[in-house]
Image (cartoon, rainbow, N blue to C red; front, side, top):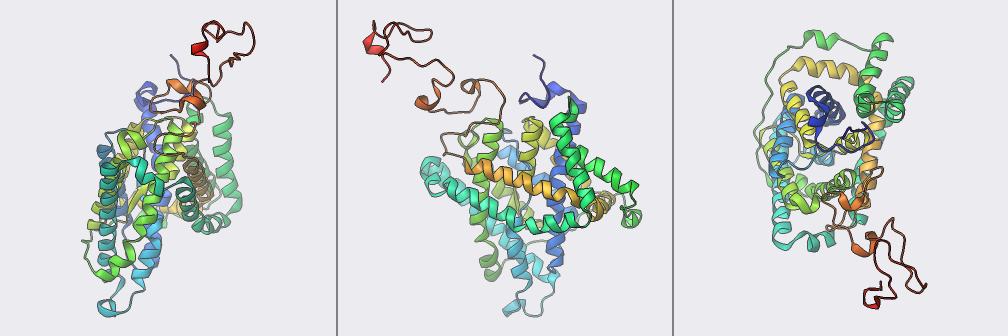
Length: 426
């Protein structure tokens, strides 16, 4: 059956053909790129020289590791976590004990050691979910907790979005207008790549207006290796960084709820939160061990899923491969930074809006046994895989209700309830 692009849910992107799959993967790359490279930029401003190329490499590797741990089922991308920015800043400002007189370059390995321990806490919670079961553990993570945590993380960065857009308000409006028009009035392929069109379109406008600086692009090499830093461990740095994992884990649970709601599949039950936490924790540990920031599931990519309605994890894995390849190219990094300083910053308000949508969907999650009604147009909820629907709430949705007290009123498709009193509805 022919799919209506942008309207019908697509769970197998191979139906669209290889060229369209490659373009969709590129869209997910651009959706996560700004936030992923922004973390090392901010951490470097604190005085800790975190590498953008290394961050990109471990974002891609971490995403692939996450997909392996989750049986290749969950369409999530793992990028740099903003939750740990406060921890990096605190470690950078440490000036007591062994940290007295240390440079930022010397302090960075200890901050990364705290990231490794924070990732290990994910594994402990994953084991708890596996042994006790999600029903009991989720009592301590209700929507009233997970939803506001995600909102607060996004709102904490909203000032950055306004500051970025304020560098050129008219260009910000151009970028947002392109995305809105493509998503609402676009047809076919245009409708499912609005973010990519917003990035490219606003960049072309910025280029015409003379707002793109190619100075750094000309001096960058096409191919270059990442800068790896081995983690070191100190109790003080661990006590600063590791507790942040509690907030990050609640964010993760909210993300899984939001992705489940968006796609209409209950990933909390299958493959299970223990597997998603395991993948996120291992990705964070590997990144921290070799010089990258903590990873987390990205709401920006969940927003792209909702806009494109293409829910195939293969598209996310393509974006991960793109990130790994581009991590070996300093010139691409410089090219994107030329957009970031002038044009690409204008997309940041929309990026935080996508985070807000993720928080809203995560806050509606009712528990480990159910998923909120997915964002689909039409279709029968009972036929959507992964949903465990409550019988009394959903069984007769959309059917003509039976009234046993009315003579001759028959159950739709069934027998007369007056002739079969034992089968009357309670």
